[in-house]
Image (cartoon, rainbow, N blue to C red; front, side):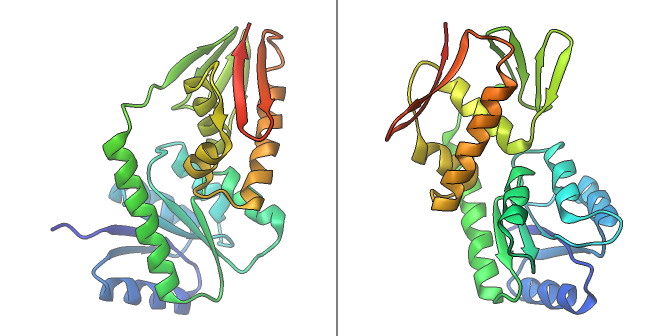
Length: 231
């Protein structure tokens, strides 16, 4: 049986060595990069099953690294390790495509539990989902999910990974109610209060991105969710 491949990006030698050895003892295969540049190169070569990124790293921080990874794939789970706890840092992490966030200091058991939860969820989605469409027509807009582009005329909007995920869900549920909990579980991983408020911000952003076509509306269905309507 093949080992689960983990890409670890951590610039602190002691922390990196500790995490690598602890995961290898639990039969993971760990590729450890000491900065964001080396981590991205390793990702392109190794194609890991899951990524663990420190936020503060030399040459390329974890947020930038995650954005570049999401430009290549939407499937590989990403966990951020950080000493930061500000709401804005959490919001930024999720916006660029993180699946989970764990604050230092942490226990290895907690990290491993979260890793398995994300890997199991990924396997479950692969078994149940139909193949993902990559391009959509939304009124006068063209939406390329793979490249995270929303285009109208000669104007192109670059979306974040989570913005694209949420827009795809709305398109897939066009003229039907997209349940809040379904969206939160799929895009954010859980329906916590913080994630719920974050989703409301993302809905507002999508409304602004789509305002070039007045026939498109994202309607708030109170107590239930949202509906994408195109007149």
